[in-house]
Length: 174
Image 1 (cartoon, rainbow, N blue to C red):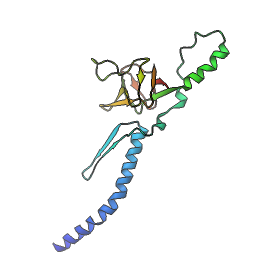
Image 2 (image 1 turned 135 degrees about the vertical axis):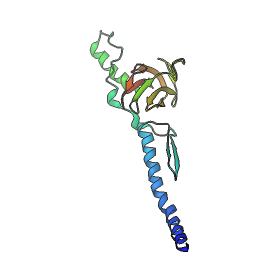
Image 3 (image 1 turned 30 degrees about the vertical axis):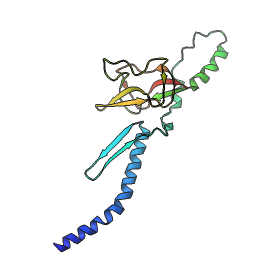
């Protein structure tokens, strides 16, 4: 029995030294997933470890999808005089809009439940971190927050509609 006690002690000594770097690598990988998918929180729960990664709101640059901005047509077709002059300012105006995209595949909801008002309406002022909608994915309700402060100028998806990863949801004028 003494021989069994020694290997256990030897096994325990290397574990903390060896356990540190893999857990750090796991934490870094989870932090990347949280950032890539615009999640507010991710929890990994195992027998040995419970690890919670929460987003602090420091970096949100990978969420921008610039090619999707020109796709929606603005409400400026009524400006027929000076068509060439109107075409030049329109791209400049759309560059000032930030597009909020879906971080994953799911179902888009503009309000927390059917009896509640929408999180935001057109022309509302929004703050960075303010909840804009919910995307339900695998029976989990994920709140989608504004990446920037500004004025809410476009709703690009119908309530209750399915959305794809990277699909534009809203436009915010900065």
